[in-house]
Every structure is written in C-alpha cells, then in structure tokens.
Image 1 (cartoon, rainbow, N blue to C red):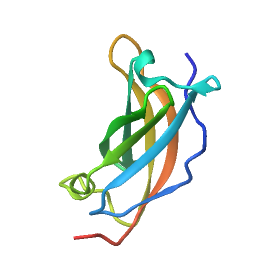
Image 2: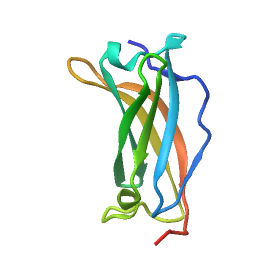
Image 3: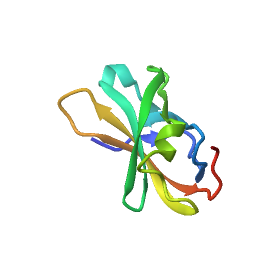
Length: 119
C-alpha cells in the first residue's frame, strides 16, 4: 500500500504557544481523491520537538473530496508538555485506520516554535 500525497504541498509552519494551530489538507491516493470514509481512515497528526510529542485532533471536511483538518488546542501547545520555545520540529500527518491495517503517511512538515507566546 503506497503512501498518500498532498495535492498542494504544505510549506514549513510557525506554531505560536497559546494559539490554536491547525493544518488543512487535500489528500490523494494514487492520483485520485482519498475517500476517508470508504477507505476507513481518520486524519491524525502530531507535532514533535525534541522529546515532546503532541497529538492533534483530526476531522474530515469532505470525505469523498479527500479534505481534512488536524488541529491542536491552545492548551495542548502550552500545557505541561509545552513545545520548547524558539525551536524546530516536525508535523507528521497520517491516515489512521479504524481497524485492520497500518497507518498511511501523508506528509512530514517542518515547524518552527516561536519564542513569543499568547497568554
């Protein structure tokens, strides 16, 4: 099973501690829209900086159209496992199966965590 691809690449992202952060995506599987429901997958993602790994909450926007969003709350980005300020990390987006198969990688994106924060 091949990896999924983004229709439009997502450039490096900037995450500001204390702000909601979200990534929207349009996903293809072998050149056609990835159908989230028929394929039986849920969008997922995580941000990793050093040893800190924060899971995002995914939602399908248009199942047949291949679009979805993964979001992190402001509290998640600044909680007890806060992302280290003024650092670089990665955002990994993937399709998580509801049952019976392996995750399918969509994209890995560079992320910069700013030194500023929103109280």
